[in-house]
Length: 102
Image (cartoon, rainbow, N blue to C red; front, side):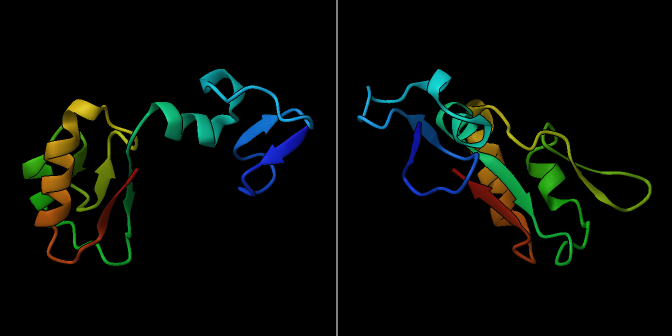
C-alpha cells in the first residue's frame, strides 16, 4: 500500500500502489475519516481563553464554563446542525481563542 496526499504516516487515504478506486469513508484512517464524515472540529487556545462564557451563551451545547472558572468543550466535533451557533461563539470570543476547523 502507498499513501496518497502526503498527509504523514497514519493520516489520510491508503490506496493501492496501482492507484485503486477513489476513497470512501471506510478507506480512510481515523483523522482523515473524521474530516470526511464529521465536518467541523473545535480548537480552543486555552492560553488566550479568559473563560468569560460568551461562547457558552452562544452555544451551550458545545461550551461550558464551570464553577472552577475553566472552559470545557463538551463536543469537540459537534454536529453540522450546530455550525451556526459554534461560529457565533467563535465570533463572540473577545480573545479570538476559538477556531472552527473544517
